[in-house]
Length: 533
Image (cartoon, rainbow, N blue to C red; front, side, top):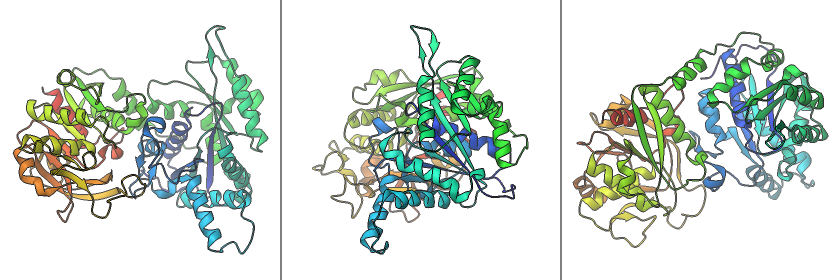
């Protein structure tokens, strides 16, 4: 949660860049530094700047880029914003995600409207100025604003962002900017040595753009000898105390503890003028919960179609882990390929979870999972598409053999899931979904209301198709009831099976609101039901 401002001085900015390769851990590093600052009582904000020419992350391939995280106000963003929210317990907004495409689109619109007074519009100073304006906007109300620059320093599309953060020191004062560079040091198995040359080159490249880092985070797969830090310090121009060696941890939630136990804490203390000892009990408790072996084991079958990249479902996985710690069970996640799923797969797990997704591939397997759960009493949690396939399965069981979603079968007469009014013809475009926070009213006494301990809830959404209430009778005959709707009753938000041990599905994405120290009640509910079988 947001801390109280207590620094009483100029706003500070921390810029996190990466070198050698992408996916090196900049997002976790940024979020973990923020967590340490929060633990010192400092009010922190955070932002992701992505050089992609996309306007937002809504149309990016999840198999390549990982999940599309959605903020409370409906921004479709990079998955790093999920890391930020989980680590910092903040609810972020549109201003916390900045992409080149959006900035360029705005610049071109302004040029066409004559707002530049006939001046030549250029990357410098106009795009770099727009980036800096976006950073200051996102920083409003905080003591320390952390900015992660996506990609790798030296990428063509990222040059404007690197130049913008270099210039930014002139705007706010170099003493108010802390530059953190995250590099990767590989281990060469044949020679049995860590090679620092790629990291040295990455640091040289950053300096070539006019930025001398104040802190270097060195990522390795395994613990590296002290000599690596010494060599990196020498070639980066920073003190050895400002080099943090960060090998692969058992859990990302260990990183705040590692940072607080390193020389980087002193760097942060000097930078903020705050030498308060951080209160890290929250992270110590999370580490204890994660390392404790429980008496009960629960295997959850994740019925998914993206099998090559776990980042596609990272918020779901993190929500399951948090719920496992809360319910004190040992969690095993079994990946079930939705394209080949069978009853044998479903038999082998204690509970089934069907996550969200777009496109027809794998849908029959997801419908089969919902049908199996209805037939057998296997605990089931459906998220977004997981609700829609559950409704399809129930309607078929209720007598509509050809019941389907109009998304997958436009010719079906029984479109139990259909396109939202006004959205016909826009199925392949961005910005036409129901996005962000929406209220729901739950039926008193329902499983959903019992799980939440409330009859009014707010969850985040990302979908275009809705349950067609014209077929409520057949859906109910198939074993499901509507247990939650929009306040006006027009939109179905939750369905469940009244006689089932735990069959709950929501049109929302509750995984986006789960926190490592505050498990989401729907995930807790399915694990509790599974542990009792």
